[in-house]
Image 1 (cartoon, rainbow, N blue to C red):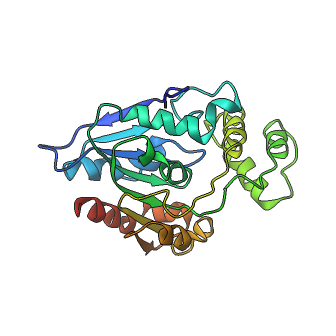
Image 2: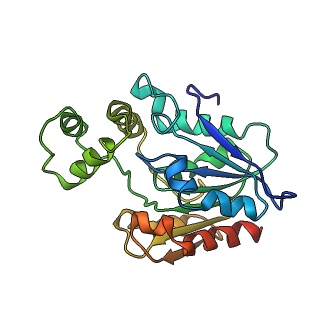
Length: 243
């Protein structure tokens, strides 16, 4: 499978000799690699522990190009672009969060993934119930949508420095291939992580039950707080280093 879109990818070298495979960090929706992985200290911690780091920005996010159409940002297209980002590696570990984790679920089918840590994910398609037209109307100066989920998305896509039109196309593209996880899809060793107060991760235990030998770690915090907390970082690094 070849990618139809390119990604901006930051690369960081390990301090000293590498102590394991490179780590691919995949951020969440309406964020970027810098926000999720640099400002939170993840990249620095991983390189200090002897890991090279690859940090892509998803299409329409950060420094990556905005998608021209929704067809350019289906899950299949983005997963192919992520596979291209690790092309040439014999193996790679993955730490992914929220939308990044939903995409990473399917990445081992097309990339040499050794171990994965998936955080802030649930078995429910995250954008199925979003009224994209209402969110985009708000982005154009209209009223905040009455539906709480759509209102949350509307605020996310209109945050400082965000391209609301590109993010709207991303939602449309992702909805074309809803997340429908099932047992047997994911077979690489996987640790699931969720914040104890994170409603976005509801049902994560059902995902863990689908993956033989996986485990689930609950850490303090809500959706954003869990990612920034040291408990998540510690749980992720200990799992990758155990392989």
